[in-house]
Image (cartoon, rainbow, N blue to C red; front, side):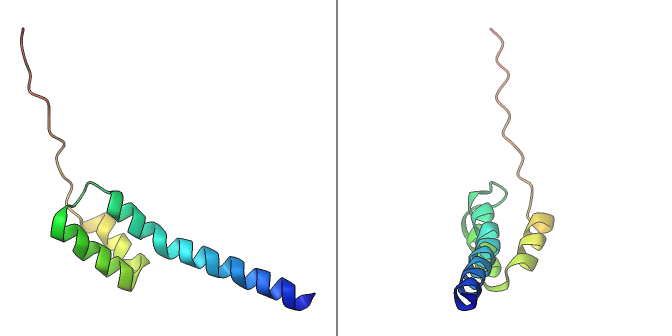
Length: 74
């Protein structure tokens, strides 16, 4: 029974470790802060360095201005 419990505990730890590693990649991929090659570069950095790079991304990635709709007068 101890072997099964240890296996289950290990599987849960591995699963949560994988989630913690993959969440920043998903957040950056869906983000509108960067586009194109810059986004690919950030994704590669996060892929290889993980959470530290994600924190830097949140602090250093440029904030894009939201396009304003043209004011039309009728």
